[in-house]
Amino acid sequence: MYHDHFGLREAPFTITPDTNFFFAHSSHLEALNTLLVAARSGEGFMKVVGEVGTGKTLLCRKFLAALEGESFVTAYIPNPYVGPNTLLLAVADELGVVYPARVNQHQLLKEITRFLIDTSAAGRQVVVCLDEAQAMPVETLEALRLLTNLETERRKLLQVVLFGQPELDVKLEEARIRQLKQRITFSCRLQPFNRPDVEYYLQHRMTVAGYSGAPAFDDGATRRIHRASGGVPRLINILAHKALMAAFGEGVHRVGERHVRVAIADTESVPVRKGRHRRLWRAFGVAAGVAGVCVGTLLWIGIA
Image: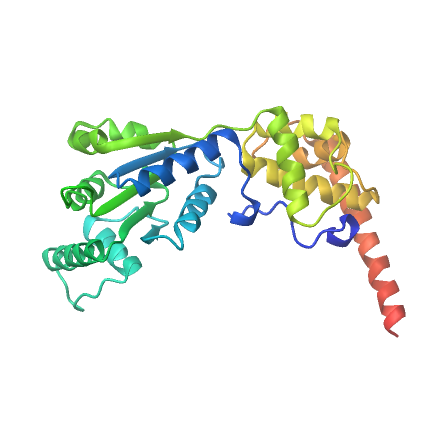
């Protein structure tokens, strides 16, 4: 709706994990560099923990993209809330392992093992990334640990990176999987953005989307977004998107604090007294609709 108004090629604040918009925040960049060094040195288990919306999936995809073109075979498992056998099937499918139609767990393990040995002999490393790892059943985590027992004299045949919410740390404290916790050689934690980070982040995403000129969000808007979002990237994106809509509806080219207040009032995950702001949001929505109708009419007249 507001792309042309702000001179954008694409939406700057989508919540899908697009690596083109990766922001080199200190904790995210540190985690990425740690993962790359660990993967290239052949470590076994690695772990990245962060609260909901802090960018774990985007970091995972950035990490996998950075490994492309190198001597790696990678697999990405987005939903590991499955039993041990189903997880092994998912890993085999992602890696391109060929196995019989009616395969049991023992046969599947043999096929995966053969693939790992052959891949290592060809001078390549295998890395498997599991997103939302806090949801993995304990039995599945243990099966994953057993799979990583395979190693040469110099390195593991399979490297695993666990991406999860803080609940993953709680799960790893269970006595049944204490051996897995001992094998985690590198652990990173993603932190929310501080106030200057939010300012750079907003400008970064606007620039990547095609914006040029003075900062689109004034100091009051940036401050309010930081306070309301707690520095969580996903909430920042949601609030920034709605604030841009409100500014567009008003016909202005810079987002102010009042536009962010309206965005906050329309976002359920941000607690606020919403009565007056909801009315304002509806007013901005009406203005945006009227603007859209006017533009559409002018275009229709031009075409006619």
